[in-house]
Length: 309
Image 1 (cartoon, rainbow, N blue to C red):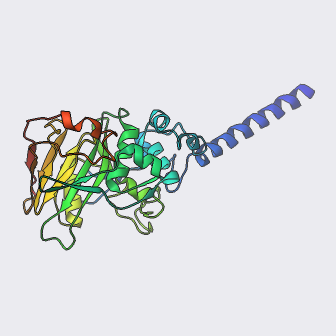
Image 2 (cartoon, one colour):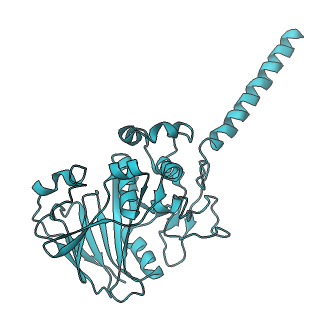
Image 3 (cartoon, rainbow, N blue to C red):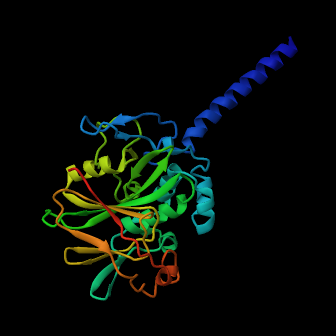
């Protein structure tokens, strides 16, 4: 009888331990609106047949929890080593970073160039705009997927507002996933709760969460919300955007393999690769990706794809 009591007691303790672990497993990884146990695919409407909202965990389950991730916030290189998927990157940004506006602008040969803040400086300052923050996330995720990159877009000449924006994308198991890292910062707070429901989500821009889509379909979705007419996909963070009136320029360092331009049917802006790389401001010159700019030139013309909308 004593042996049976002991065995039953051990089974109860074991079962309790398993249940506690199961509870702790989600509570240690659920941060903000991210849900480690989320499992859904939500269609984004009849017009977009291959476009779905998905949870961050669909791009990899986190190994680093919200307690352990505090050990990474002061070590730039260790953070890159330990953050291995989009879920961990969004958790990291939400816990330690805030949105800030503005790029460093510098005029070179009559063209005004906007230099995004290097990832290392964003890491140190704990804030950044869309370009700086997406550059940091690109740094953290580089090498973790089939492809990691950035999508830039700019509003058309006659749009009610004027300006551009840039977000991240990854390619995973042959599919593209787009997301706006600024949506998880405390001041923006526009990333939806990962519950698979599009109702009662508050202030959400549905271009912000993890969206699986082909690049051109995602561009059409964005274009439908506002008159964005000029797009570019960059496979790395070597890009800089220059402008002179309605003419935009990209640095000579870019190749056909690293950058592709897309324009809508009603686009009234022009874009081309500049004949050389602009001079980098002194405060950014020693940081990647700018440290090699002066010596890297590519004579290839960039591909410009005309969109069917």
